[in-house]
Image (cartoon, rainbow over all chains, first blue to last red; front, side):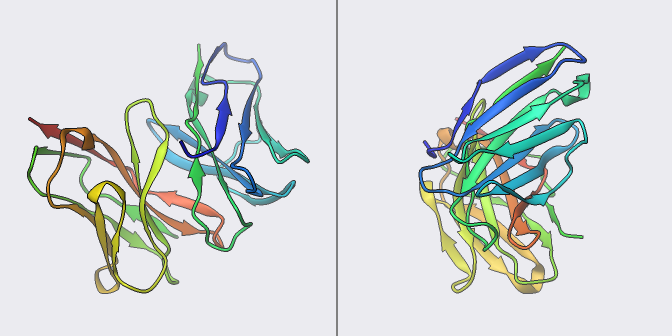
Length: 114
Length: 113
């Protein structure tokens, strides 16, 4: 158990809908990262937040957004969902903002878009 | 651009045999390298990491990896594989100023009893 929690574990929804994925980092960690794992794209970095501020952005679609709240939990919002958004979404956390610390991964949320 | 290549998509070994999973990276600066394992339906668990110093690093579950700068490689090894090692293994490099992990495509390990 990494100490990173993600809810829900599974999510099934329809095209065009909007969903919110939630992540709670390890106690004391200030950085949260979101990754997407899909069959065609593999594991890809989406976005990082550090202590409430966006720190780095990767291959995140404009239909996707994220935020980190004062209690340091983070939410990833996916809207206007398409079939291709079906994937496993991981959250990770680390203690620092960008000084090459290891990242601890949660169990993931499996999103299925029908 | 930074990248990680895992040339073997699938590998099958017999239980008790030795294992080597290959990883090559492309990164201009000093690489910070990781190996993660993902069991079916599970998240990513860190096996080991290389930041600096000794080029042979030890990890959990009896795994080790050797960093070879001249070959841009960070291969994962285990002297004797157990059936429970069957999983997918990902090599990754920390890039973007230390903010993001760039992953390889993974190697699926099957262990024959």
